[in-house]
Image (cartoon, rainbow, N blue to C red; front, side):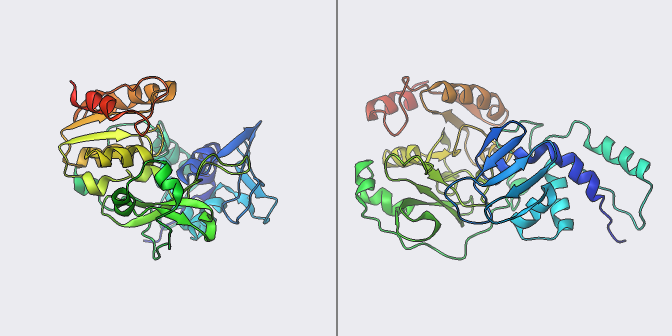
Length: 338
C-alpha cells in the first residue's frame, strides 16, 4: 500500500506552531508583532536576518535567501524531503495525515485529520506538558532525534577561565572541557553533551566571561534539541538519589562534591527528559533550581510531574544564589536535609 500524505493539512496544522518548532531546534528568537526574528540556522551570521511570520507560517532569511513554509524549514534543517518533513512534523504534533492507496475527498480528509488532531499537544517542545509518558527504558530507547557526532573538537583544557570558575583539573578532564579556537564555537569554552547512552551528540559553547552585546552567553549548534537530553545522565543513571539542576556549571560543582546530578539546560522539563528520569534507577529526586523567581516557578511546575514516578523534594537556594555559587555548607545542608 503506497502512502499518501496531505501536505496542506500538515502545513496548516503546524503553521501556528512555527515558534515551537524553533524551540525544538534550540533557536532563540525575538518577537516583533507577528514575526519572529532570529539568527539564520542555515548560514553563519552575527546579527539576526531570518524572519518567521507566525501568522502565515513562512520564513525568509535576508542574508542567505533561504525561504519557504514551515515544512520547507524542517526539510532544510533535517536535510530530508518534504514528505519526510511532513511525517516528522505530524509526529511531533500528533497530526495524523491519511495513508491510502488513492487520494480521498477533501472533506473526508479534513474530518479524519481534525478528529485525530483534536486536543493534540506537541510531543517534545521545550516546556510542553501533556499526558504521562512511557516510563520504561524500552519506551524511551532510541526515541531521541539527536544524532551522534562523527568528530571531536581539539580543545585547550588549560584556559584560565576554567580555573576562574573554580573547576579542578579532574572535573575539566572528566567532562572534556576546553577552549575552542576555530569553527562555530571559536572563542568559547566548549562543553561536550552526551546522551543517555554516553554518545557525543553536541557541543555547547560558553562565552568565557560576560559576552559582548553581539554574542549570546551560550551557543548551541543548529539542529540540536536540548529537550531530548539530560546533561550528565549517562554518568549517574544508576544513582538512587538524583539532583536536578538548570545548568552545566551546577553539575560540575555537584560532581566535585560527589553528588549525582543532571541538568535540564534551562528551566523547562520536556516529556522526553521526564521519561528519562523515570527510566533511570533514581528513587528520590531533589530539585535544586537557581535561587530566583524563574527557578522557583520551574521547581513548582516540575515537581508534580516527576512525583508520578519518584519521590520528589524541592531544595530552595537563597535568593540570588546558584548551585555553582552557593557555599559547600549551604549545598550540603540543602541536599542532606529532609
